[in-house]
Length: 471
Image (cartoon, rainbow, N blue to C red; front, side):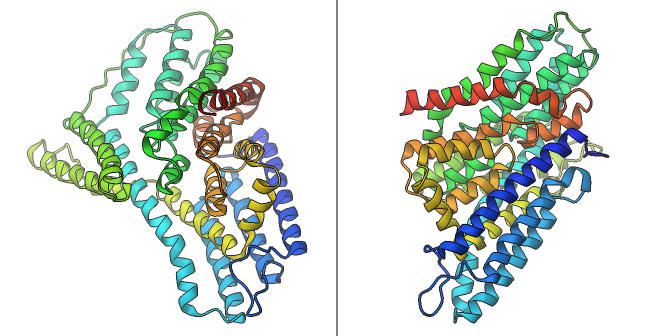
């Protein structure tokens, strides 16, 4: 995405790496000292293996692979590659260690397939969702929305609020990355001559997209993970609506007073949706309804509803392709090819890496240290802040792997904090990283960091609102 990594991003990346390494080294040292009493893989005598060199090597492999992920912006090494390699090496070490301790091949298969079941259900769900997003882009749905906003002739302050509100409303059904890119394109099209406006509008979009995704299972991968794990029912996520809204509004209201006055020139840019766009939108809504209904009424996992809906989209594309103009090709299979496979494979690497550490007993130890030692409140709030430096996917999967005994209130709390915590830094979420590329030179790490205290107030206000309403 970037030709050269900006020095500001480099500094904070190094800071994040230092924090990650430090915490994991301390974690590994504690595991070595204590013996990790909660290990799953044990010696024939019933002892633990967390202190063995091969087990500690797995921790080091995880650290190194994640270092490579965090340096993606300047190394141009896609994030899926190091975590896939890391996951493979971790399980090779585990297999050797298991063989030394008399673990049968059948037991090893069971351990691996546990992670495969988790990954496959999430991957199929995301595959269908991403295909729908790609189809809507092909039918120019997002382009039409962008064009109408560009032509609206809004003032800079009005545009600030419109793009923020739309980002908050779109992200619960579309991922925060797509939402941020669409709204960011609007901001750049009408306000690129006013750098201060672009910076503030982009910060607002990032905060709004992350906040909007926190109260819907479809808004973020972490909320989807919690939903599919069965800790929170679909309708119960909407208890986070007001905390998420507060998280968006608090910094937005403060920043709106600093928006430059004026009204950019209205741009003439005609955009129209292609044939079949409205049908695709309707099918998308039906697919979401099927995913919910399959889970609530039929006892089927949500991905079955998503894949059934995807089949309807494929049949629709067949009809459109064979009844329309020859130059208007609409083949869903082509959109499946263009799905963000790097993200899906990254997700595979994360699940199997963290799953491997869990099989060795490290997640059990972490759960005892954090949730039993610090308490659920402090731990969940701290993990939200950590997700600003470390991607929220491994943070959430680590929590799910620990499987601490949390109340419904605290499962909602960790969903909220990991969902909106990434807004604290521009590199804390996919939305922020994407906009740094789209609005390069206008929206930067330090431009976002300047408003981090205000965003932190919004983060705290969201948590307080959750305690007030749902506590």
